[in-house]
Length: 117
Length: 111
Image (cartoon, rainbow over all chains, first blue to last red; front, side):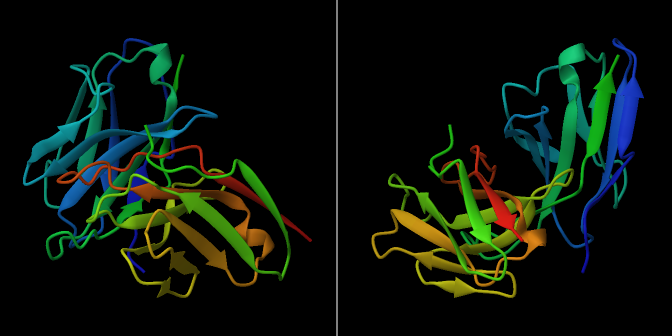
């Protein structure tokens, strides 16, 4: 069964450094998402992406965050200047298209654990 | 905030059925009900979704109340591998597909 893959599984970075988290969505999916989960807390939506632009973003997704689909297979999340509070699990998800209101489910990767020192 | 409410935790014996309830009294007519689960150290895993009719797949069944204000995820025979946090999720609002996760139900399966 096709799956969303994320690399690296664990990233350790010094505060203030830039970090790029990578995702390979399922190949025929066109909608992409990033979520994060701080240890012991809820999964939180960050951003959705379709047709090479951001569809929606949360308050968490400020100017320090950006997303990109640099080629036909990768989807990346960049944090420009990391803070201690960015330490979390970051999950990528993708979704197939379908008829209007068909609500195709999102499929999640197993995440990247980001640790800011 | 999440538009669903679920019990914080439930326990089940192995090999027995489990019924995980979810209330969503403010559901709109076009909202699908999605269920995910999150095993330790993994991302959320899709389980099942439905609109009005009951749904079955290889993982579980979804029973949706006639007024759609509640639903129940049914695991027919719980195994130790089913121990996870189960989330019942509605689409946030019409026109958006982001998920708003609540705290979910932590299912403990006893051997």
